[in-house]
Length: 480
Image (cartoon, rainbow, N blue to C red; front, side, top):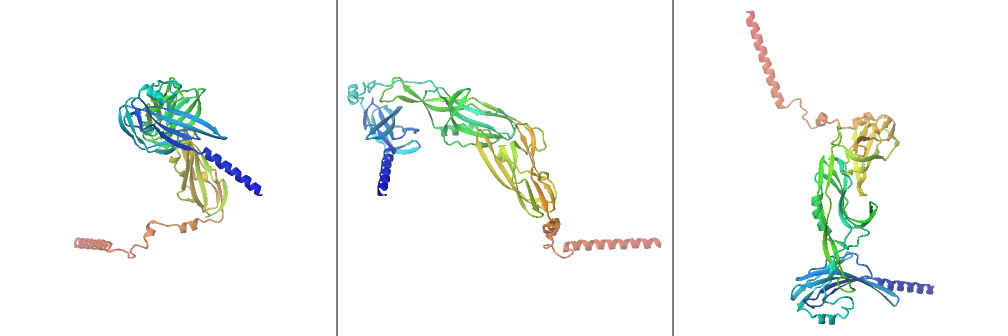
């Protein structure tokens, strides 16, 4: 038992030592305090035991010009323990002599922020070439002197930026998918990096988003690579935006050409082991423009009210038996592809003995694979007061337009209800509010007439009596 505990402890200590050795560590190393006018200042970021997958822009230094970025990696095996490090070096060239301050800064490596306190840099007279060589005894050995400026060349790229739509023509209310993406072929050799994608996208969406549409945004938060094949050629696609739009009115939707800027590195013509082997540059890609024609729906009495899409009905019951007056839940669900948010409740057809109220509504929307799909459910509480067989298809219907078939269609329930028991119609009527005049009985004056009506009644009687007296006098005079 003791031997087993000791062995377990030994294994744990070994694993702890291994994890400690593999722990990541980021170090930011700043160049010297003093340099010559013809020398370069560097900021070096080293990450231990992991690859540098992404990094932020290096800080600017007043009166210094960025000269490019180089990367390096190393691996060591000491006492059976393996360690590695990866470095990025940003080079700066001073433009004049003087004292300059590199302020404190943060830099993001693999999504995490790391800080540096900065420093003051003194730029003096240009260093002599012999002094530079004395400071760097390996300069000539690795291909060029310390003062020699590297020559950078542009590598031909095989990449493009695309604004794509899946349909050139839709009906009013029918959705079309739009996505923005950067593509690189498998054979591409030019090094690229995204340049401020969030800022660029904010400006682009002001031009891209159509007016008078309902938008379902796919909310892309991370730009991830996808492998796709186009005309038999393999590409890596980086989507930066995707949404489905549902037009409210007919006409044409014009989407202009869109520009997208990428960092494209120029590479050293004669690369060396040390020093900058690539230089940051920029390239702007431009997409093609798109036009989407929006057609009106065919004539129909409800063309301005129906949903557009490909839908099916989903019910929670098929055949059940209930007693008269006994309530039950009925779920009328509509699932499919289209603008789920715009789906309205089914139409209630007139019919006796079936009582229900406004339904509870629940919906679920899925955005993916270039389309919007989901389900919207209308949950009814139903009571029936007369025995018999009830087909819910006689009481509910939902009309929609199917753009794939270009026809109007109707979804009706399949559920059938068998109702047993004594009639509860009279009981239901007695329990209902009569409303109208009957609601006012308890609050109205119980006198036959109020004072205003009494005045009008008295006046009318007096006029009739006066007319009778006049008529009687006329008759008496004629007789004489």
